[in-house]
Image (cartoon, rainbow, N blue to C red; front, side, top):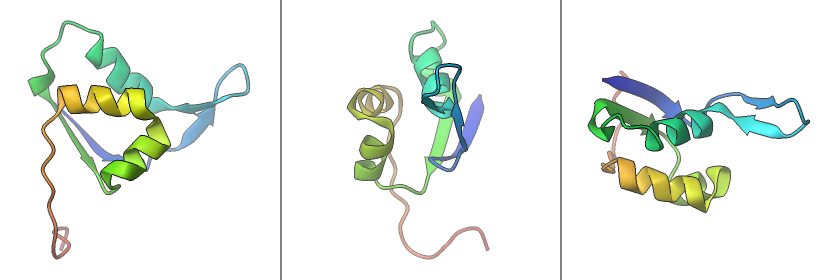
Amino acid sequence: GRLFDALGAENIGKNDFGGRDRIMREIITTIYESDIPFYYYHLTFNLDLDQIKRVYGERFFSRLKAMFNFINLSGEDRRG
């Protein structure tokens, strides 16, 4: 499997045409369009669902909903 940690924290690069690229959007879209089963992938993020929609767009968010189960972990920071 693969784990992508901290969606939304990646650097935003410029593409060849001067636009802004979010590399994780491209990676997730490629996985979505491939024949690889989704259950091999895990994703973490600190953004709430509205922020994900605003940052990545409705179409990308729709793909996330099709590919992943969302589990909200609230409470104390678990990194300690």
